[in-house]
Length: 119
Image 1 (cartoon, rainbow, N blue to C red):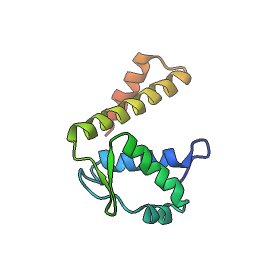
Image 2 (cartoon, one colour):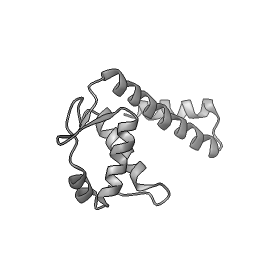
Image 3 (cartoon, rainbow, N blue to C red):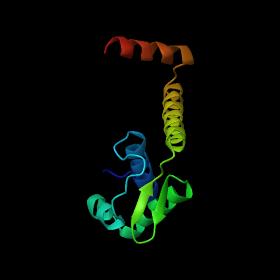
Image 4 (cartoon, helix red, strand yellow):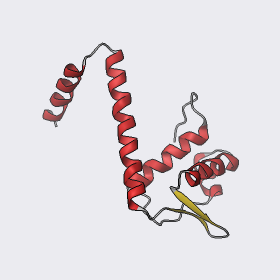
């Protein structure tokens, strides 16, 4: 994972784990890797990973079980809402970036259509 210097590392780890959850790579009810394992894999301080896990827990995406670890929620609607929210953020950022380049909404739609036809 390559980190963006403009964002706190813990928030990037939160987004990384959310992406794995909504994509199904980490499924409902799955145990997350230990804080130490993630820290070692990503080459970050374990406290940073712990903070990421705390954020996910505050958002009810994961739950900690003392002595057992952290587990992804089994609430499918919570994960579906998270996926929708993440998709909306991506689309909003895309539209804003395209408008910053000078494109209007119709031009953006045309560009997307051309991309889809090219697949």
